[in-house]
Length: 143
Image (cartoon, rainbow, N blue to C red; front, side, top):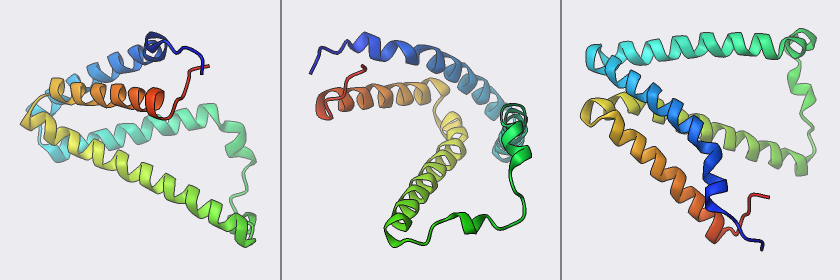
């Protein structure tokens, strides 16, 4: 295994952490001034609107060429060996969706009980421990 610089692994994460931290601080100010259901509802509404605009602008060719006739189930092969792979991938997608739902619905509660600083330090330490786990236990390298 070649030498791995921890600084080179952490550097690409600085900008997303900074923008995410400022968004969390703004969300904390909204939670302190408004009811929780209103903040979570507005978060869902604006997230759906922004993601819809992004999908329409970046995936317009794919959306235009897609068949919207309800026969998408025919594309899934019925071979037993491939079916387990699709079920596994669907399970991973479902687990990711559940984790994101739990994170974004409990974040306003954490903001109200503690603060966005506590939440951001928690996310930052999770990234750091994930980095250590990948480098020292899984023996991953950046290159």
